[in-house]
Amino acid sequence: MPDVAQSFIERGDLAHLALLLWAGGASWLLVWSLRELASANRRFDAFVRELARFNRKYGAEK
Image 1 (cartoon, rainbow, N blue to C red):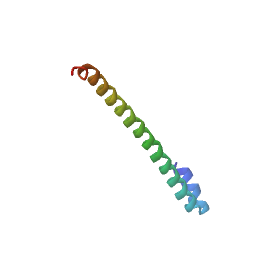
Image 2: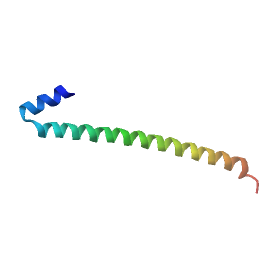
Image 3: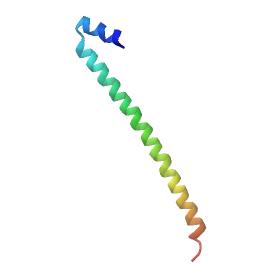
Image 4: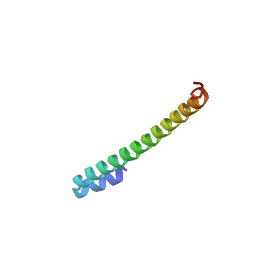
């Protein structure tokens, strides 16, 4: 990575380097957010399944 940064600095393309870093950071944040969302969906699904199992087991006694 330092070679790439040095190349940008030598050619005076600091704005392009900043844009590249921003785009990389934004992309990483999107991937991280989607992973967290998928994980939250799995946890919620497990919760709903357990709740349904509980209701089947104890909800029929009325």
